[in-house]
Length: 142
Image: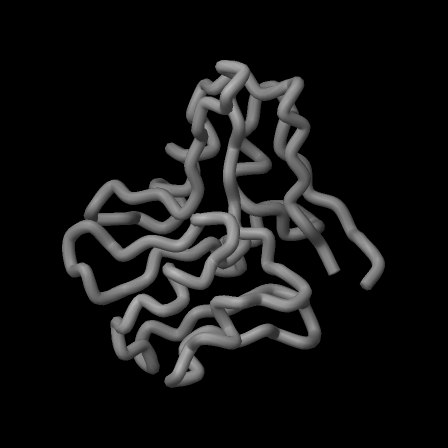
């Protein structure tokens, strides 16, 4: 299973990861599925879906639109099954999920750029575009 790792000490807050997310998903609304916030020490902190081992968004989804893929370990979202109840947004411990700003019916959620796979490991576009290598992609054991 692969995960996105963040080294906050290397992040300069350039927002290349956010722009890469918008571009990779060709988002009409210009919404990214990640963001960079400033923490209490005025340090830039990228925030991404953690594809949790025990994802609250999946447990609270009444329609099955949020699912944990047992093979990849990713939490996947199926907009066609979504009832737009936003329980997943409320349940996310990290505050990562949000509604699309145009349609307000779809959930904006990281899919690890499975639709792109630009290198041999299939690293997400945000990882590829981070100039400081603050965002990396590596295999972890379950």
